[in-house]
Length: 150
Image 1: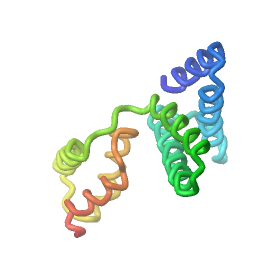
Image 2 (image 1 turned 180 degrees about the vertical axis):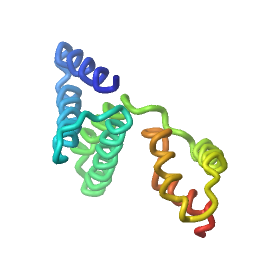
Image 3 (image 1 turned 90 degrees about the horizontal axis):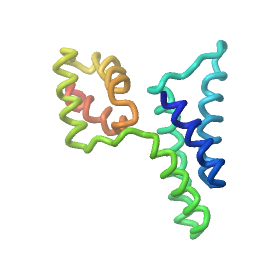
Image 4 (image 1 turned 30 degrees about the vertical axis):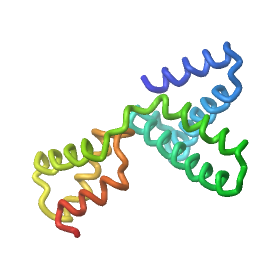
């Protein structure tokens, strides 16, 4: 479904001659294809895996954006911002820290997770249910805290 949305947006951008959008959408498709063909067997990514690819692309662009801002390269920083906006348009709405904390607490109860040994399966369940909607670095720290890891 998400792949279809990306390809439709690419066609629309091509018709509108929106060069930045076309190039960014092509980059998304290239990253998806790269992930699909990098394993020994070719596979087709599902929406959760595509969201993971796009989240990584956004993170890379945010890191580049910081570097460009520090270096005073407003032109390159603007380009990174545009790409982040385009990619973010396909991502689900991010949860607030409070919403994420509530979801994590509820999931821990549901899974009956009690110790740090349960962290792996808790994080896997979070990633499956909340792909693209939660900051998993923050979530990991909270899961660890709630499971008694400090």
